Length: 189
Image (cartoon, rainbow, N blue to C red; front, top):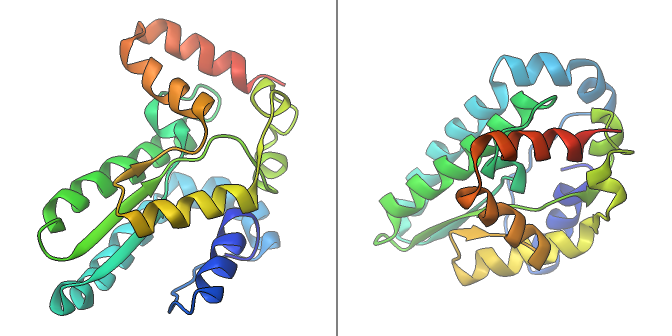
């Protein structure tokens, strides 16, 4: 949570007097190990372990909120960024499943699915000049505010922005071969 959406969310939670558990990697470590860490599934392992740990106390208290950052990428395949897209799909589906399991226990789980966002991610991933980012990326503070409001309302899946919502749901009704081609085109630089 040292930059981008994570940093903005930390500031919002802190200003609201909330207790936080923050996880971040230094930028140097992130740049040098990003591909290796993702391919080893550490992001997924950490999400599952932290969710399990947090839920124990929340379920005992019968109250709590979990906010996981997925992505609109989680709704579709991602040629040229397949591991990232698949990881975000896991975050989305895992969050939805856990949300349903705990819905009657006073605990909510929100999967926030931002689209392109102005952070260092695009540059690190090498797609800051992609069509997706050139079409317009949302400021991280706006995305963070939407994520926070969605979590506080108890939404299970939250998508910021009409275009992101249309994109995420249109893939359900489109031929899969077309979705793959469009996703690849959007990620081209």
